[in-house]
Image (cartoon, rainbow, N blue to C red):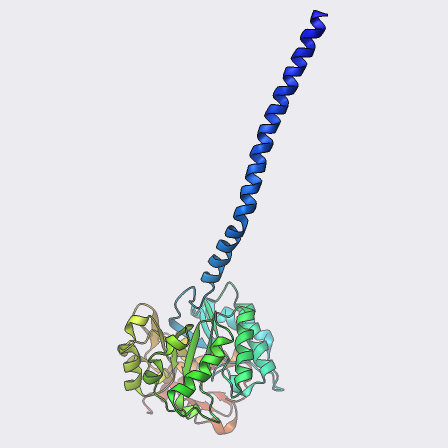
Length: 347
């Protein structure tokens, strides 16, 4: 009987200690679970705020240096030749070391394309440039505010790195405030996208000075990051740079023949066609930019390279555009480099 009693007592003690130990851990687990549940909303909020702040309108890397204004390749039937865009990306990155592009601008004939075509071209460049290009900026300007907003939203959805807009040029804005109101509406359609104003008065006929436009623009358009300045008014450009030095804006110059002068004035980058090739006559200027000695020679070589790749364009090969690019383009396509070289100093 004593053995039975002792065994029962030992069993009772072991059960008690087992229950005591299990209960202790259950309490700890229960406390941890309650703590996790109570903190979960705060953890979720932290993750959301971290992601949201990282996606606000500031690019991963400041847009500067060489930015290729891409041509939109066409088939002989006037349809977009999407099949060569991947090769175009590889050419820019691997052969020329250019990793920033400006899509659907003047060179890309964006305003000659339908809205559907512009969307498809933007998608193709973003898709083919993923993990290869640093920044893909899409021009989304249009005469219709609604269409421009649609293109801006689409650019954000496909993962573009920024959007640019020209001034509407049929019913033109008559002063700075009207123009900013238009730009503000477009930028609001994609508020997390870095926003650039595309200043090209020779084509839009909108003569509002860029220096005047920049005054106070970031208060109205928080996503504003800079401008593509495609005008020959170097005084206006110089004032833009001089009066906005503390704002870390991108000042991208778009008139190839005046680029060296613009660099002296403080341009932070160049957007154009000659930026797409490295020619033996090229010389390095500054830390970020490599610039040609001869825009005429370089443009001729550029078109010889790019035109062969793209095959056709919709507009630039039209015979009456033979005056384009200072005489180095004719109805048969780009002038050979040897001919282009002989045209140095035409203007």
